[in-house]
Figure 1 (cartoon, one colour):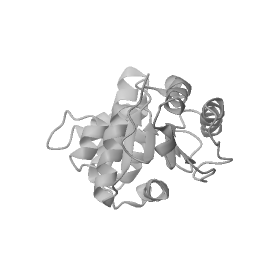
Figure 2 (figure 1 turned 45 degrees about the vertical axis):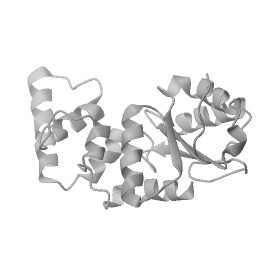
Figure 3 (figure 1 turned 120 degrees about the vertical axis):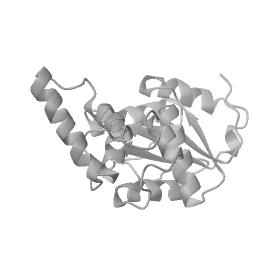
Figure 4 (figure 1 turned 30 degrees about the vertical axis):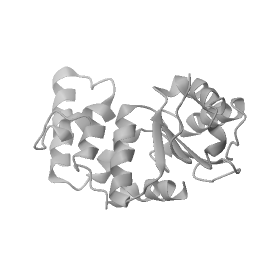
Length: 200
């Protein structure tokens, strides 16, 4: 697998939604010169990093950022990224958001930052916690729980879908919603993500 290198700064993210999310945020911040690629799910990170390491133009990369969801255990998710980096012969940071190495410098972000568990969806919902519709979303899932005596398998993703159903275009995915300007980039919830991108 050959990964075309177009920029000296590279951001590797889990999937398509993350590509769109970070593209929208970088546009908001007017950050240029960062290439984003996805590794199609956390189980593929090791293979994607090894392929990247073997790309002819790899020596052009000066800065590498890796993003992964915490899922149920942020420490385990971070260790998994470290293992994948080491397997590819790349510098592995001792902790998230701490750059290490040179040519390339490597920095890792586990989402949402500062939390023991969660995912990009939780970060986005944190950013709209004071939106009046957030109360409606909570009430909706309380009703679902009362009626069905269960909640959706992935409540974080379900909450994002419910929230986005209230917007002008109700059928957008999280990343598409980011490109449409539905997430409030000036919210404090995105502060560490912005700093992470500037570190690149």
